[in-house]
Amino acid sequence: MAGQVDIKDFLRSTFTDLDSNLLASEAKCKDFMSFYGGLVSDKRGSFLGELAETYGFNSQKCMALAAESGQGDGEAALLTMADKLRVSLQPRYRLLFTLVGRVDGGLQFLVNLRADVLGLTRQRSNTAVEAALFQELNVCLRELLTLWFSPGFLDVQRVTWDSPCELVQQVCKFEAVHPVASWQDIKRRVGTNRRVFAFTHRAMPNVPVVVLHVGLAPKISASLHSLLEKPSLCDSDTTAAGKGGGQAKEEREDPTNTHAAVFYSITSTQKG
Image (cartoon, rainbow, N blue to C red; front, top):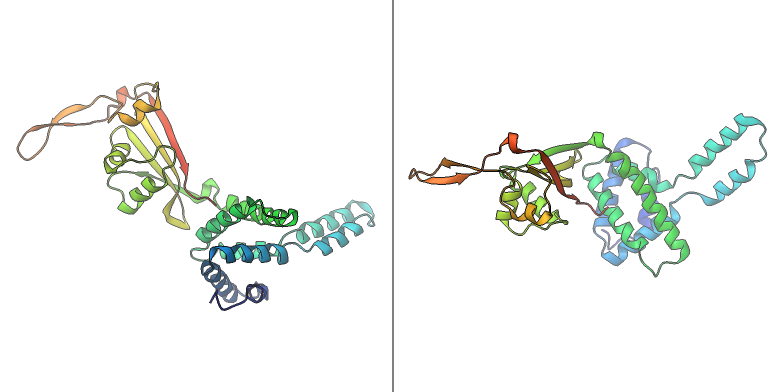
């Protein structure tokens, strides 16, 4: 579909009667996500450029309202004009993004979309106008995502060796501060005297948004090297293990010997 339909025609169709009714709006949002997802990288830049330029705020209307703002008498007239200006300064694509955020998979789509927009804002080939348009697009997405990713919408869960394999794999994949070297490494990080917490959003339940690594210790460690290399930061006990009745060391946490929690890594997994 994305290769057969002109970008301008598609956006024009998308914004026509965008909020006419719930079912039509949801269908338009899904088409928008599908269309953009089917574009190659260079076409996405053109798509976002057209979106930012044509469906931002109405500059002519804003200038007209600004010119009228000095003609009213009294504070009531000024407040009324300020409200009109506030509404007119909202870009048209804000409504589209708000509606997209409500459909299944929409929030993840907007996070990825902002990552693309951030890439465009850093291009040195942009003209001053293009840079301003992409920045306005970025600000709009940032404001919405900041609202939707407020602490009240996030869930926190502890990651252990018994957690779903997909979650453990994503913790390994996204760890950027101290990359996970092996399965043995991640097993140690989620094991005794260690904690890994994943923050997830209810609209993205299987994707850790933030991952926090913590080490429990008798005291604050002198270096991160000792924190990352040692199998355990606290004492361990020796207990019987194995079918043959042999002895094996099994680490056990000793709460009486734990006096410090060292937050040694926190990673935001989403570029957008």
